Length: 293
Ligand code: PXG
Image 1 (cartoon, rainbow, N blue to C red):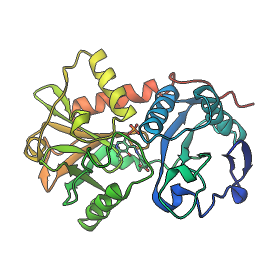
Image 2 (cartoon, rainbow, N blue to C red):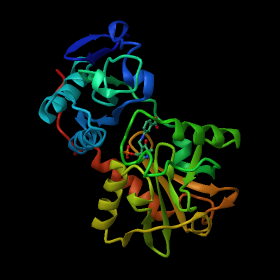
Image 3 (cartoon, rainbow, N blue to C red):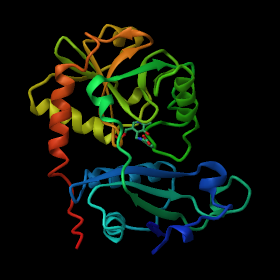
Image 4 (tube, protein in one colour):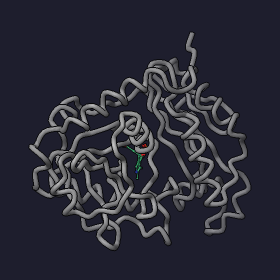
């Protein structure tokens, strides 16, 4: 069945939802986006996603042309028009149509689109048995060049790393920064557990401050767990008691092997499993209602 897509102020059929070849999002990756989930008829952490989208746009000096309230309604209405209670939502703002040069001043109006579709869940086996990952040669973008805190349409850094992971026979990559500190995976943040402390790298190392990451840190603190944002390297991961990745699409995924080194006892750890449960509970109650008829 054809989806209904929001595109520049209108709801159109998927077949009609097309952007120009002169759009600078297409020509240069000039734009920002969000990946959002809806669960049980609610858009999870919608305010946080909208806030991050507007912050990313602000950094690249992109005028979205809609208020946050209007954008919130765009997301909810897109779910409603497709009658979705559970959805994966992609909200994109590009620089819009310009000429063939780089100059963003030639793009008078940003283009906004929103896709809400059914979700492709990861196999349950991944959550039961955990995932193997590797560190890859490609380093995470230098924050002084392209700051990973901006969720921009330029994802080549992540895609290169993803290809290197696949070449190594695993589905996900761990990216280091130029100093060798652990940053994140290609579309997920990373956590380790050592001696009961939950540790994740600080944003300044060069990573996207994930909404799932922040949610997991909150949930852990509510449980009385000591949560620390601090620098660590590959070796710290090898000797961690537990490791997991967090992201909107993946939620929390246990990691049981990194560069061939078994993590902990090679099974998803108790803190990881506890947090997976707490996260899934939260998805039942957080976020504005879609109110499908
Ligand atoms: N780091 C990066 C680089 C990301 O792109 C996350 C962390 C997690 O952030 P949230 O806010 O979702 O907890 C992301 C988010 C995919 C996919 O298909 C994932 C993202 C973006 C695009 C596609 O898995 N990531």
